[in-house]
Length: 116
Image (cartoon, rainbow, N blue to C red):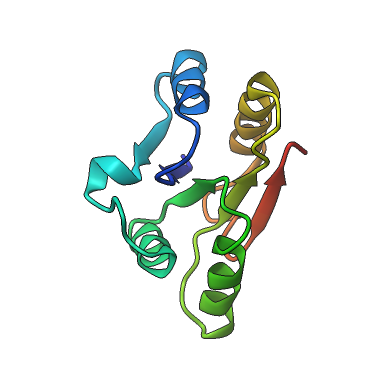
């Protein structure tokens, strides 16, 4: 099963909606794992170490750091970047579709943009 890390500013309405739709989903928030206030490279490194796909709204910097990890040959479990103006219900459906249609490890080194 895919595991996720929700970035510090990721919309908690989406996280709660995912838990409502799929209680068994494995999501932790940056705040839950004592990474609040950490820089993006630290968050990406922790996500890779824990084999978690990062859910984020931060398209400004996360993308650059994720590609730097790949370029340097470091693991990068995957990133799902969600537009801040996307409809919550649509984002939830898209994330569930990614979960249902992806094999474990398939998002390694990938960046997906939602809504699809």
